[in-house]
Length: 340
Image (cartoon, rainbow, N blue to C red):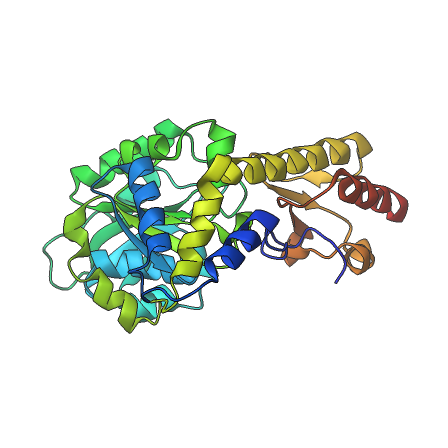
């Protein structure tokens, strides 16, 4: 497969991560998380987010979101999210099937939801004919490549807590957001009022495995059972823990995310120089959204694969990753220029 801009999932694994997996592949250790790699990784998360943080490793991002939401809800609850949210659009109904909850999509602006949009669903409390609002879920980075500012997050969490709701953050690209905001993880998650966090790494150089963080230990009474029942419990969990050890060492997460974000900004600048392609979103992290002539898309995809985001208006999404090169960017833009 040619190099391209389809997804940061299409990139490989960072060499440091592969090396960490290889180093962990020695001898026998206890399975299911009672190993030194997993325990050390959990300790790193606690150091980063607070000692009372509860940490659960899972296979993938959908599993992380489902585990977080399942731990905090009953089947009669509802979950408020953006109409573009991954849990709404791209998880094949898994959150609804496995939590039993109703998803309530809020019309988003540039991928974000606001307190004003959320308020339309804050009613029907204690009314037995109405699903009971329980969680607001936001994505950071959003599915449109935008980043919630710190004050935007605080406004949502303040509203949620005023009504007795919890806030979940889908952080599949959390590292890219941290770089964009130039803030430590904790500042725009726990300290901003987030209750549960899906902490992603696969899109930023890991092989597999995500972490679910709970900042209220009371929410985790049944989490370990839910994780097992939802088939998200690793037996050889050391290979997830080892990856996160390497991910945090020397801030590899930041190096990878900075590069991905910088490549997206380079792509944005080069596209703007052409003056022939309309960008539809401001590039804030590692995604560039644009409208290109429909007729050239197949030819572009032959050389640099990517996905069409909105066929109705020929809008495409270009994602950069930790291994995107300047040569990738310049070659791609040159091809766009030639085809147009």
